[in-house]
Length: 554
Image (cartoon, rainbow, N blue to C red; front, side, top):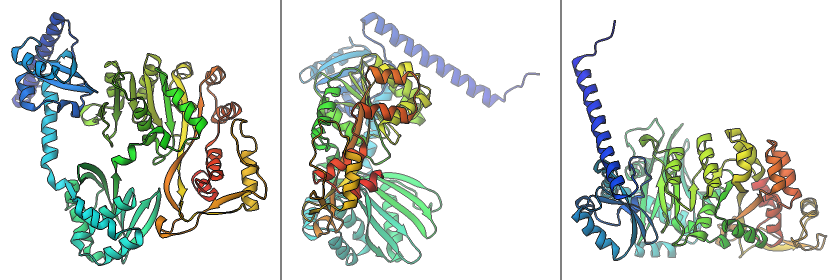
């Protein structure tokens, strides 16, 4: 016997069906308008809308003109309109003509509402002043005079009232160049540490008495629940420094003696690097530039979290970012905003995943696509197909080395026959600390270090020139000074390995090779390994042997 639904459920079901019919009718009318005008039809519920592009015109004009700017590349706009012949639409378009060129597409009024929602989101962000810490230029200048290193910061912190501690910590982190601030409650103290150049450094231990005030303020700024103490929470807030906004990601995790806090500082100045600033050898730099001149194929970078992959990909984007090149990214989240490219962010709750977003992006006919990370088979398949069909694709994978890229893609379920022609190059990287230029000490190499260099550098390709490896060789070793916070190091630089896919490598890929087989062929064809690249940076005085071994191992 069929189950009879309650009247309330029947009414709800009927309402949903009618609503669906209405939406379908509206979209059909938009498709008819597109056919009539000869313009493409788009559905903005699945289209990757660039929030910054939407703000090119104000909300009132957008609604009156029944249009929305949905992407922006240089001075070229893509605009969705309900009716291109509407007089009000024409009025807005004529205004835009004075400063921009544009392409039109037809979208339904319901679809346009999705784009207009971005105005409300922007307004909400602006109104959430509780999520902004403003550091005034005068205050920053004073702090910079007072703080030269961690020792100065420790001294200042111990004399400050608890209400000022957070501001001082943030300003100090920016001054010293820390990437993270860690609060770690222990049995009798709160341990405060900074991550400098990838390594945690103790700053100060302070009394737990004032910690609840700091914790509450951070939670309030980050939009977290103040009364929740037994569950992890994630949030973010903004530091306003003059005209520049710096995002801070906050993670709160319950522990034995209280809640642990990690604040990650996303300073946009760190992403403005040219590829020449990444620390690549001259031969590698030339190789990369030739790869970036290609118009199709994929370049995949690999390495663990925090190895600088995002910085490298943004440097690639910056190198090829020109007015006649259309670049679209899909990221999770957008950490740094870049002028002149269309950046979109995954929103799984709204059904906008890496795979779904990438599928939509390909329909936008970009020249270059940046995928924040390949995490699943569907994303991998679409990325490889995009690389085969006229797009230059950049993305990242979590593998330990460049050779691991091929087996990893095969593990995802990508057929070797697809990987071989789609992939231009696979690359791995790490970040090593630079020796402090002020206190590094040049001395005769130890016998142990000499044997290590001979072991790994004796069979380098002939185009790589190095000094003679003998007992008279001098290299730099770390010392300590205030300039480097007594660590011996200041700043970081990348070390890299890369191989290109040529005919011989293609044949190997078709056999579904093991990592060791790919590694062997890549080295045979002249690939400098991560360890070798690190040791070459030891010879030129950039870093130390102990630092390279700390990061790479032997």
